[in-house]
Image (cartoon, rainbow, N blue to C red; front, side):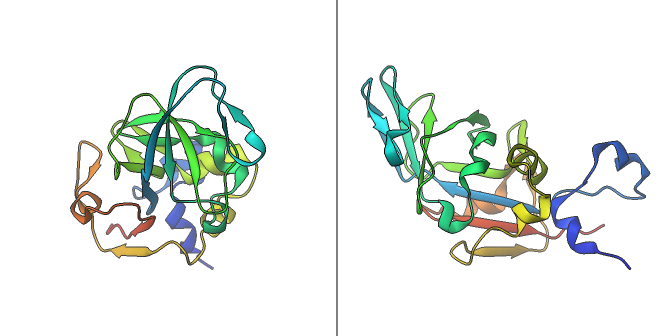
Length: 183
């Protein structure tokens, strides 16, 4: 029996990649956008029960994805990518949104990558699964119908930029992109 559904999440074990007769790339990526960017003062609390407190003035971005969409509290340690930089999720993840600590103010609508590549950095399904101590497929299957799926036959990338996503010019919309690579 062949279970090709696991191909969506990419190579399962890096040490076995050399045994494959083809290159297997991750076919799934999850993206959203910054919905709100705000400079908070020191000692301000963020998230349910104020679990995060700013220690100095800090830029915080709000992203419209939460546990009701399938981005669970135990996924937060992997962080997110914004303009190719890995940034931290701060505070507790809410039902419909989460907050990230920003290194500077970014424009509303800036892409936030949860799973996928930006610049030279990548967050894989395996990264999320390892941090959350759960199987990769459980991470892949956790995304709910609240997240639109876009199926694309092929995707052109330049320097890690996803031309297809950039062309959508979406604001505040959460996307789950599934790309089918032709071998």
